[in-house]
Image 1 (spheres, rainbow, N blue to C red):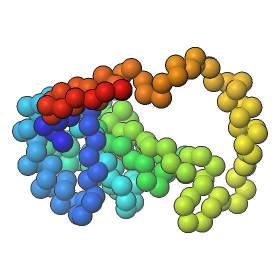
Image 2 (cartoon, one colour; image 1 turned 60 degrees about the horizontal axis):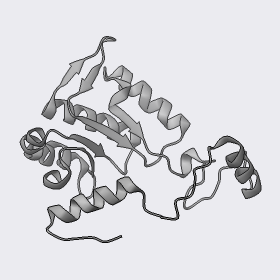
Image 3 (cartoon, rainbow, N blue to C red; image 1 turned 180 degrees about the horizontal axis):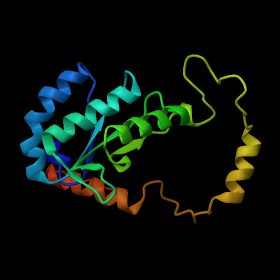
Length: 179
């Protein structure tokens, strides 16, 4: 992954097997290659307690890559960040933000993924929580039509920038792509 995407922003799910071990053993083992490539590594815990997982990632990344103190006195990781998407809703985000601040890290080290918890608390197994307002499709469509800028259709379902990225990747692999 670092070889192919290491000069840009790239994310890595860290908990496929053992999250703590990935942070304590795998992260240090890839550090030199990541630093050499210069990209921005996003650590992605995907299970467990969101607050604990984010803090563990921040501490591990700080240990491996270091951090700088910003003008407000909080640590900003060097070339690394965390994204938490599993188990997120507004209350969990507030708890994570409070824990980040209490640990002395800047809020801009962490991004939040938007899953069902941020959209009316729809969850895979239990459905919506009681007392959460639901909008029907007509209401959502009307709001989108009113609030979102309409883009002119191009007749092509692949954007020019995505085509360039695909072409670059195919060229790197010695292959050609036609659209």
